[in-house]
Picture (cartoon, rainbow, N blue to C red):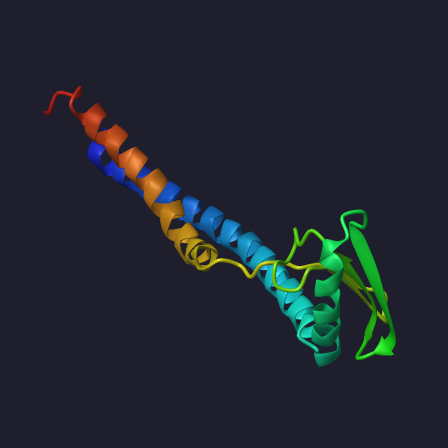
Length: 152
């Protein structure tokens, strides 16, 4: 029995399996990042329309009314926006106070932050860690186990 060669082969095999698992995790994370980026871009597209910015300035005057938590502005068909719900406490978006935007096609858009840069780094590194972690663990176990085996 060759413990050294068997450990090396097992480490490589589990490293490859770990890489495949890391690729699967990367794919799932990439789908989440793309979905979040799409939601963010779509909301920003509507929130930065001139008509919405103009209404936002008007909305700033409503923030002193402590009894009204949400206020609505109806924009029938203007620029694809049906209705805007304003949050008078500005808990969702400090810049504009928009809680949600309903489009004429029935979508409800809420402020969504852009995905942080570290998530893109995680997508790139998940397969690498998927290889290195099982490979390193098996190599370490083999190294420790080799200390208990008497050389021939």
